[in-house]
Amino acid sequence: MVDLFDQAYQDRKQRNAPLAERMRPANFQGFFGQEELVGKRSPLRKIIQEDNLSSLIFWGPPGSGKTTLAKIIAQETQSFFVYFSAVATSIKEVREAISLAQERLKFQEQRTILFLDEIHRFNKAQQDALLPYVEDGTIVLIGATTENPSFEIISPLLSRSAVFVLKSLDSSALRKILLRALQDKKRGLGLLEFQILEPSLKKLIYFADGDARVALNALEFIVNDLKGEKEKIIKPEKVSSLLQKHALRYDKGGEEHYNVISAFIKSLRDSDPDGALYWLARMVESGEDPRFIARRMIVFASEDIGNADPQALQVATAVARAVDYVGLPEAQINLAQGTTYLATAPKSDASYIALLKAKEDARKGSFGVPLPLRNAVTSLMKKLGYGQDYQYAHDFPEGKVEQDHFPPELGKKTYYSPYSPRPKKKC
Image 1: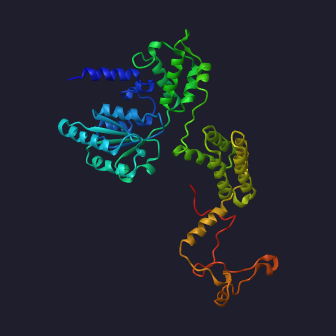
Image 2: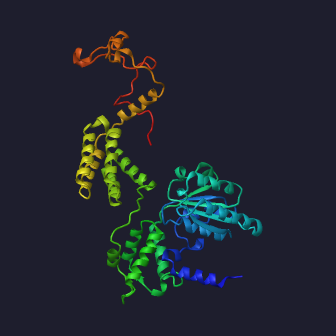
Image 3: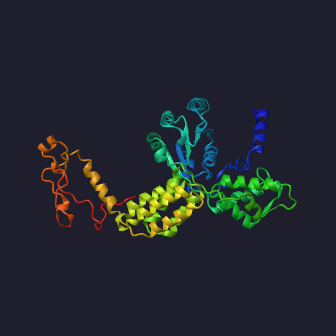
């Protein structure tokens, strides 16, 4: 029997929901973007069509369609859908849902999809608790995460799940999503009969930065502001005034943070000042701590330039001091100067490679320091031979002396050579 009160509540809840929630598609026909993932011949569609569903991990940026895709899969496979956010859910609540899933499977022969949003927020013990029910088929787990699953999801759970990577939505997908929301009279804004100019649409797409939720929330915000206007046209100047700054996606605690700094460092290493400046600008515009950028530049100066240009370390250190002393926004000029200097400087990682070689030998054992290299600070030490036969460099022409500086167990080694080829490829 249909609960009329509950149906009325659900209808009212849907009407009052944000536009982004109301416009969530219910099937693949309304799902825009991620063609490689959800296309008719894609592995994921094949899994669904053949009803061979196993646990899945959706990894992608915010607003790329992870939750929507999970709901569509539940609809297509006629599975019962249970939504949890790992941020606000206890393992006790999850266990209760699993218990209901067991009854549902036993008495109704219906599969349960347990969707866990931000699954990376569950700790190891909480993730471990899911494992038995994934293994015995009580639930089909679909986890969604913005973080790299390799680091955030336990290996046993990861090995039992298929990982699918979602990308930021492209301009074409965002255009379709926005236009559909403007035209849809049942769930969207169609009854308001607003028109949007092409430049306005482009500004909204740019603002969204690949995030459908941001795009729809921005559109709803603009339309609500214009409701009292006689002219129902969304003009670019109105979009600009209401959305004053492009919301660049840059989670300083997440993977994208490391992706961008990696792109910055690799641009410096490849002697590309323009690429390095772009990634610097991305970090500055997104609110990255300038001291973090300066610290990475100091490391780079020694790791990738080294003695090819010893002044690079002085420049990087000076930039770090300037950042502390001046602060933003002016310090971005110091960062830019340091960036272009480091990018155009000659490159050598000989010191870094030499250190790696030395560390390999250092791990072979705690060999004693040869007696000639020890200081005889007491008469007993002198009697034991400390410092005996040590040759003082300043007593020799040009201050150079041939002397063994290694433990006998290792023998003489050569680590540093500015011109020798690198022994291994760095990531």
